[in-house]
Image 1 (cartoon, rainbow, N blue to C red):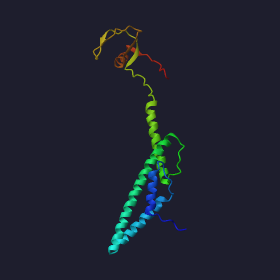
Image 2 (cartoon, one colour):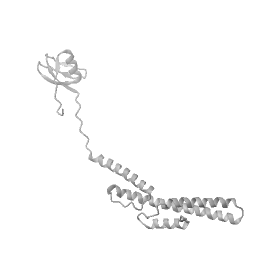
Image 3 (cartoon, rainbow, N blue to C red):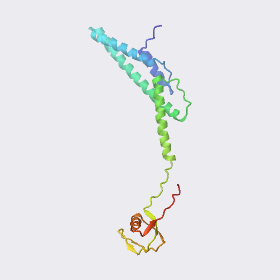
Image 4 (cartoon, rainbow, N blue to C red):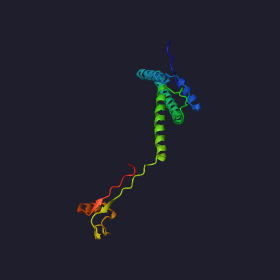
Length: 198
């Protein structure tokens, strides 16, 4: 059976119908293939007409150029309409899986699935931004608990503060720098505190 040849009027009808409907319009699965054949044939005829001499050939070439131009314009508008409808469909598809995909062409179905995937990923990221509570960090302590093993008189430290005096057996919470210094001098010993989460 001979394949049906697409015409410019067919393209215009498809575009007009798409424009009139709010939802996607069902088109033949091989519509884009037929469009490609149509354009290739018109361009071939145009090249032939340009090679011929005479008024008739020039008029034919002008007519073909105009038809190709109008066909491409109608196809671009048709595509833009379907693109917007597919995006609307994808926005619905993010919320529910009950979406009619029967009117999508194969390439359009792939576009729809990618759009839904991207939109879902973005939506999840947006929701997590407000739902996920950051785990509170344990406050970082710059002090150390020590037990005095040898009496310490009052002393002035490099931070300008005065510390002490401390009696033997006394427990003190000192800045780590001072605690380490006194441990090295044998004046105090570190008091180990069990981590509540361990």
